[in-house]
Length: 394
Image (cartoon, rainbow, N blue to C red):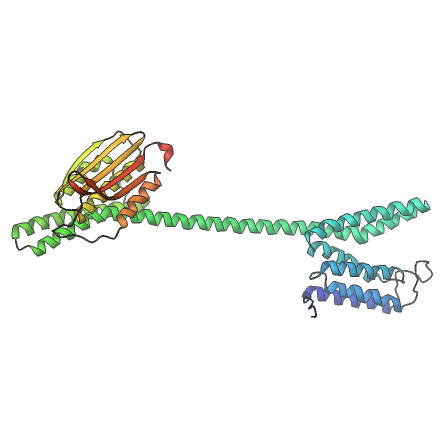
């Protein structure tokens, strides 16, 4: 099967055509590099000059796509040009082929070619002088250095600068990619935090509104309906206040709403009182010292969500809320009767449990939620353990 050579670069075509035309111009006016009387000229006359010129011009076509092949072929053409009267353009194109071999060749070629050119320049300086002991022979080494070492060194310098620029570009792209990933993660984390806050702030009040509105619509008792409407109004006002607090969290200090302080464990009594107003029989047992603000917020939200779930799903009975601090951790437990309820209920999506687990995981704690057996029957228990040591959470 025939091997298809890669298409030459457009600039290489221009270089090859320019070199060939320039060489033909010098050949046409009879300007050769050496006179026919020199001993090194084995093929005198005008016509032998054209072969190495044409071959070197063809190598220019391959300077970018096949630099090693171009260099070896051009070296053979230069050797042939040396035993003719020679053409200055052939020599110039050979220097460009060496430059291109270093610049576009493999990394191994880029390292080896300058070293080989340097060794040849030293050998061309030392050996002729040692043989003939004539100072003029030192010019041979200078000529070899100009033809071989100078373009190879230039190509190496340009390649190093090009590689450094490419590495800098890749680093910039990687930095931009990492920054975009960090931004996306930050946005995702912030969306999750906002979802938790929105759910925990509003779900309790909306659940109470849904349950009491259902009771008011299903019972033909004006007094019961009046009580249900009072509870609905109270939860509506509190829910609106919570929404305003969330808006305050989302605005900066330059906005028209100042952020409100996050709830703390000191507000558990009021939270329990609100649950009692909504119809729950709640007992609060809190024994703890001062804990970090993130732990306070997480514990408050866990109790709040547990009371909301009890309001929506629990059977009639006592709900027990207990907090205790021991062994460097704050334990939160909320238990309620488990089973089918007779009264109205509100639908649940499971987002509350997800939010509680996320809050606990962010603090490096543990959370368990599910039915349990107790002396009073089957209960639903939520138990969380939150480390209170500052270094245990971000």
